[in-house]
Image 1 (tube, one colour):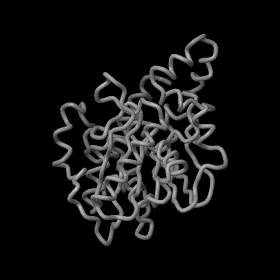
Image 2 (cartoon, rainbow, N blue to C red):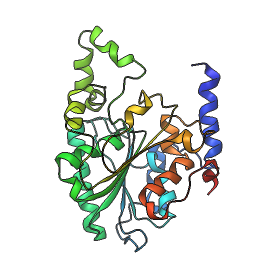
Image 3 (cartoon, rainbow, N blue to C red):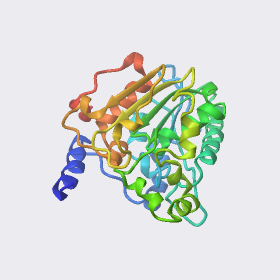
Length: 286
């Protein structure tokens, strides 16, 4: 890819973000999360939005930085919003989502139970970015999550893994590389296309009964490759390509989850399909 293309895509996405600023480092922003209105355990879901929303960050993300755009967006629209940290590795601060994905799903299970107990809701909706859009499917399939979740919205999710534009296919040619990846950062190894984890997760179909699924992908995804590997098949599935909604949107893997208000508008539609409004480039300013 030419260098100017690397620059123009995030800049164009930033314009579509309608003035939303890309978050600073997690350490500097963590104290600001409560004042933003999310992770407020006194929040009670309204009749209009009866389910709390749980946000699940991506690999190398955390519960604050990943959601400085979307959490306030949803909170301003009347949702009770919560986010968790998961997949922590010993001695690695701020950058999470690196531990074994099965264990991360157990953390999500416990967190959803906490949110439901605090809010009194019977079900939640989950919105996840990258690994955070894929990992909850393990919770839904193997940990009883289908009884606690109404909808899963994946933003550029790694549902069928990634080839990183073919780089992962080189791993077998470097003795010990796959073992090192699995030991040092298990979640990265789990997200390589064809991994044992993904084979188990997707065996027998992508979905479970009783849950609505939405995938929002971007043509310019350079992390989940090919981008359409994030799509799901099965009942109650809607796969959306961001550029079909707004051809001018050049968001790549990070921008679509961090500050793309066109994507955020489509998330809101997925959470409340009965009141969905068409998502267009103009949605960036709504």
